[in-house]
Amino acid sequence: MKDFDQIIGYKKVKDELSKIADTLKNQETYRALGVRPPKGLLLHGVPGVGKTLMAQSLIDASGWKAVTCRKSEPDGKFVTVIRKAFQKAAESAPAIVFLDDLDKFANDDEGHRNSEEYVTVQSCIDDVKSLDVFVLATVNEMSCLPRSLTRAGRFDRIIEIHPPENDDAVQIIEHYLKGKVLADDLDLNTIADLLDGKSCATLEAVMNEAGLMAGYERAECITMKHVVRACLQTVHRMVLDNDVFSAKIDLASPCRDSFIVCHEAGHVVTSEVLAPGNVVLVSSKGRRGHEGGFVQSRQKTTVSSYQDIENEVIGVLGGKAAVDIVYGELDMGAADDIDKAFELIRSLQESVASTGTLLHVYSEYRISENAFFAQESSAAAVVGLLYQKTKAILFEHRDFLDAVAQTLAEKKFLLSKDIARIREKCPSMNDERPCSGRAV
Ligand SMILES: Nc1ncnc2c1ncn2[C@@H]1O[C@H](COP(=O)(O)OP(=O)(O)O)[C@@H](O)[C@H]1O
Ligand SMILES: [Mg+2]
Image (cartoon, rainbow, N blue to C red; front, side):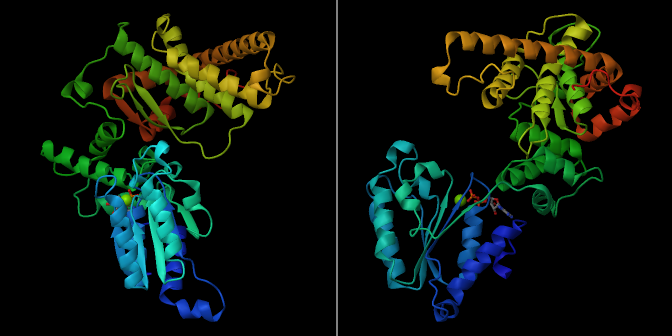
């Protein structure tokens, strides 16, 4: 297990890899039982999730020699490199051929699935079948590979590596913070929430960037503020010039900036009323190329119920409704939200015939013009109804809306903990009476 110690978290994957390493190290044990040890393993997942690290650990743990093959030569010449790698492994068997980033072997668009490189890999795998040669590959994008290459018999094991979650993410963040000077306010769970769904490589880059930011400021230690700013810059691609955090936003004067703050506060309030703790981060400044701010919510892991989707629509409409209530103005920045609300309702109508309009058609190609208009007008009616519910929630929790907007205008971004603190102080959020505006 020692060789897998450098992989943090991923217990199930490590267990699987150590079993495979055992089949290579102790081949006789398996052969004595009359079983054939696996001949190949393919690890796939988005870039930066640790595929190469895991493959290398498996090589180390197996004790077998390895011949590594990465795309190094221009198309045409690379075929020879592939053949030589397999040949070398065959000569020094037992050995591993390690094909790193196999999806890069040919040009990485789908049109090259039958390229010479893949055909060569395929025939080389078949050629070494009877020898003690184990074929190990990593792939970022499985759809680039021809299906024949990944069929059973060529790679006995195919394992998908996901970005780290929950405890794994916390452990990896902790690892990348080791040796750095940290402030007491650093909260690993909040950082893991901020980086949910991101690869290990991104986690590493953000922790390092946070350290650099502390250095630029000549700060004594890395604080939560540095980590959040590093996330905004690295993950959300925000341009962090000095104005981003120092600009004054006066909510009393209706202007673009105050509308944006109010809009984002509206999303936060509707979201938090219906699913407390759902918002991870709200920013009054947008990602590169985007005008408004944004809200990052917790990623859903379960399939949504009808009620969940209605609540999601209310969260989406919260921005527009807040600007409507607070400023009595039409929110010009809500076009995408309205599209999203319609999209969610249409998907409900199409998948579960939620409004009954599509009970009589079962394919979009067979939908009649009349059925289409019926569907569109019922979607508009549902979105209209949910917009009223959204406004009712905001009216009922106006104290929370004003407090979130005010704090966001001052701080420019808020984390889940800041929102929880604001919520505690708002009477409407601590009222035991049933919420009349809540979606039912
Ligand atoms: N589970 C992990 N534990 C520790 N470090 C990891 C882990 N996964 C990835 N890393 C680190 O993240 C970076 C990217 O990993 P890499 O193996 O190159 O990813 P991939 O091959 O999937 O693109 C490397 O610095 C690697 O050491
Ligand atoms: Mg790699």
